[in-house]
Amino acid sequence: MHKLNFLTFILFASIIFGAFAQKDPQAKSLLDAVSKRYQNMNGMEGKFEYTFIHDKDDINQTNSGEVALKGNMYRLALPGQEIWNDGKTSWTLIKSNGFQEVTISEVDEEIEELTPSNVYNLYKKGYHYKLKGEKKMNGKNVQEVELTAENKGNQFQRIILYVDKDSNNIQGWKMWDNSGGVLDYQFKDLKTDADLPDTHFVFHKGEYPGVEIIDLR
Image (tube, rainbow, N blue to C red; front, side, top):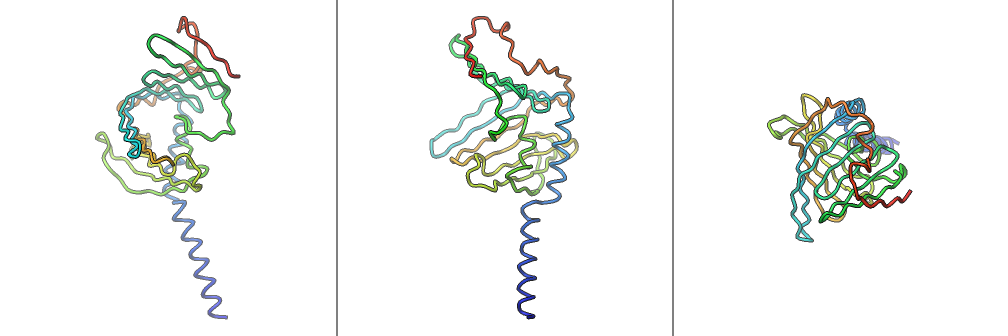
């Protein structure tokens, strides 16, 4: 009986320890604060640099872009491409050699995909998380929070968020996808007090004369 009780205690202790190791309370407290901050913003704008590395395919690319956020809405500008998303409709503009084409589609909330407006809430579903430590990034003290996927089928298996220790602003993130690619984002200019109207996240055809429209709704 004593042996059985001892084994039961060990098993129980292992379960409790494992749960805390997978869902670090300190990490959750920080992530909750970050999520609340971004959801309550009237708007955020930032410039960033991103690098994509895929050793197997011999890819090492660095580019820059701009992003704007407000709640579940976002606007993203990349070389040759721009995306507007107002939470219900998504417009993707492709520009190449003077040709412009925009594809319109409905936002499917059932499809779990990574977007600029949900990276701050990824931890809430499908990921374990823990604090890794602190480092300097662009002159700021940042805390590193590591997210690891609960399911091997997740597109991103590991994510590290870099959170400004003083402001709880995200300064960047690094992601490892399930094909061996690594994405590294770092903000170079961040404005968290932007007052952006909802129309900022809607495509306006009149501003792009001659654009070809492909409506998939």
